[in-house]
Length: 408
Length: 170
Image (cartoon, rainbow over the protein chains, first blue to last red):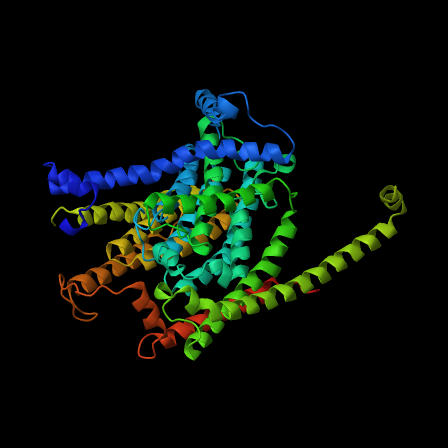
């Protein structure tokens, strides 16, 4: 245990605390920090999200409570906390009350493996990337339990749709996640960041990043995949019966999940805390991670507020007929190209010690492969789009009334 | 048994696993039964962590809780009378004999070395990593044949599922 006792723990032992107690206390502080920071971050995130949404929709957004509306979320939180806590009579009490907790925990638990700086992370799990996927499945479980336990048909219908969406998009998400894992040769998130010291993985496999981005947008239930809260169709969705802070937990979990995904993408594809001068101070490294994660987070908000909602059959067809085959093909091509290049000696076998120069030829080849795939895909998409337009033209021609309306 | 973090963990995960199992067979509500099943499977994932096999623990959660149990809840919700099942299982005697026999075999297997010799407390020094596991799966002296057989089986199952679900008229 003594070799584990570093940092705060060693300070405590030097000031006279017992070794076991000091170790326990330092772990406790770490756990509280890792779980507490996201809890507090979400308060700010909700404000950011509302402000960005407002600006995109040409509004001002919250601006009454506190400077530029910064305290609006706190006011909302007090409102949610003081609201009546309703449990429907026919609900399954235990599950109904446990679901919001599981939902929020499934997001906060992700922060345990996120490497904030080269030295600061909860744990460096050997299976970090897999842990990320495994924990996300608890979120699905929570939504299912909430929809069923509410004993409301709209809630159940909403839960069905959401779970179908989440389970389907988990497939391309995992396949896309395997690309950085393969490139780094490790599932540990710390190793994945370190392996990007030569080149960011987004350059080596841009297609995997795009697939991951789309699937994680779906996993968080954001537009164009916002079937979770289709107000006009399902009243609200799986959380219709929830009130007060229990609703607030689902709400906060969703907002935090979006930001967490931004951070995860920054780690997997954009080099995490890598950036100029990151070795000078952990704070600079942390700032780089925050900036990259924040930028990706902003683009997801942008997307959310720009595109309309898709129909469920469109979403499913897009996933199973397009995204899944694409992600499998991408994975096969990358692994094949990587192995061939390693055998020929073009690509380095160990990414951890590879420099920018070592990786240049491999990067060029992978980029060419990705570019060819993207061109081919654009061709397919253009063909499909043309067919869909022609069909809708023909359908319109069959109904003279609608045609005249459309022609006006 | 000395009291340390691992033994406490073992007791906690045993309560999860066994309690979940009892919940599955006693509840008269199918949906709660699947939730109990997840609790039980989660306890098993905990055992894998205690055995320093984090990869298996994550796969246990991902495959059993994230995929199989979720599919079971889907199936359960599509059946009628989820909440209060009236039917009772009547073949108590055969199931009692079967479970007793299974329990005795397991008890014998643990206490008497009939399924190969082993000694408790002989924990190997070297703890295999996930990398070793992956290498063993594709090593010709390792498990490459079972691994390929399992892949063929899964592919066959997938093709079979597509064949059954295919629309006759299409």
